[in-house]
Length: 255
Ligand SMILES: NC(=O)c1ccc[n+]([C@@H]2O[C@H](COP(=O)([O-])OP(=O)(O)OC[C@H]3O[C@@H](n4cnc5c(N)ncnc54)[C@H](O)[C@@H]3O)[C@@H](O)[C@H]2O)c1
Image (cartoon, rainbow, N blue to C red; front, side, top):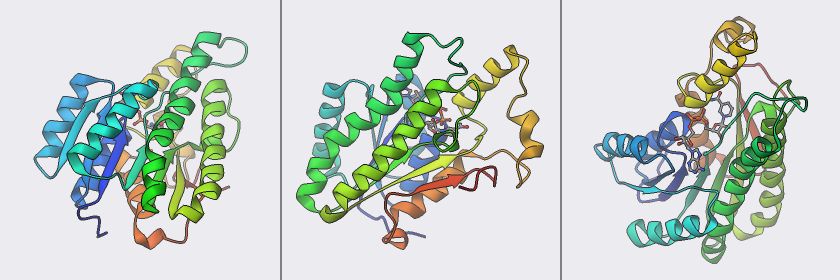
């Protein structure tokens, strides 16, 4: 559908969930895809699946570790060539409010979601600037657009990612680099969803599946719903879009 033949993409958190679906979509579109994840076992599973269908590499990288990210960038360029696309997908969520959030949990969420995104952009953007070309997608959330209960650190981190997206879009437009974000709603078949639902149930709160009837389109999202929008934003069909945070929520959030 899109012509990505020969382009090089890095997808973080690519071992499972939304990241794996994005990587699968980009492989299908002809990209060389570097799969980065800190979970070595799950990464091997993703590599086994996706290498059967196209050109992929894998690297065990914790995106909170800037040195590891820099090494990963160098290795990706050595293996595939210059990086055209960066998808900052690795992220974590936790159910906690200001009443019960622990400082160390707040910090670890910010460290992964915000500093992880910073680290990857910090390491990749200079080579994009030199080539005057590149596209970046950041995974925010509709929780990055409106405060939600029991989501203190998650909301803070996802609001920050939208701010970073807009700021980078302004700074990088003149360098031929587009930066956009996607803001998913409740996406099923992900580790994060299972983790959040377990915590919600423990608090006597409804799971995402139990709230599905409140979603205008009548179902939870699937990782592929997000991957399809990411593929569009990365394509030349979206050449006039930058600094956007696109909702993929089944209509739950419209602003
Ligand atoms: N699932 C949802 O309902 C939902 C909704 C909105 C936004 N999102 C966002 O989408 C993104 C992907 O979420 P998901 O639901 O697929 O989660 P997931 O837990 O299924 O997958 C996350 C992946 O990131 C990897 N990862 C975690 N920490 C890492 C680190 N430090 N370095 C490298 N990799 C790391 C994990 O090993 C895993 O493979 C996240 O940024 C999340 O906030 C998810």
